[in-house]
Image (cartoon, rainbow, N blue to C red):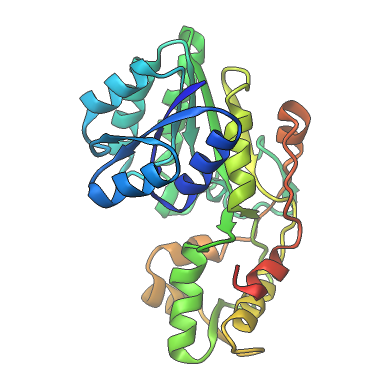
Length: 286
């Protein structure tokens, strides 16, 4: 299948291109500059020059494809919706896979699935109207699918590296918000990439949370990161206010208590996470 993908040079995008090509798909990937073009080319994708705001480029590339995977992170809801609209207009009756995130559920009060009510922190509150508009295309003959990844880990670790590993090394202790008893709904980057491949065959209007099904506490994660950073046992507790000062609004997302299950994706798509020991991966720095 011929796939057009946005966000291909990023952390998740690189893993997803690798997964798509491994499964025999051909990929065109949006590339906003020479560096991005070199990255996606090295992974076996054909670069399409342009940015998320180049709606004509998005529309034309989607029209050439049989399916679209939209991974690029927009700055605002308006930007994301404009890009999604151009991509869905272009792909027509082909599958369009849109990226959300599990943070939209807020605190989950135990283990929940895709049917849990939304209670998003301000950082991701804009996602609701975008996803509702995307999914309405199913009533008009489109094939929208939404994937909501949990907190990614593995490889570069991205957010965990930026907000925990790097500042922790500088300070001599890995941060942890409050007592760290809240749970993180983690998913390995290679597993979520496989979910995007599996989502290409999903029924129109489907929504899947992409989580590993193992929901360690934030304290357990901070201790594992400390081990990988050579700071075994050194964790510094921050109040939420202190975390906001150091991390910005994402602190409210890291402070969420989330436990989610991948049961729907397992049952409907045959997707089973292969990485079930996130603490070992975090402790190993991989």
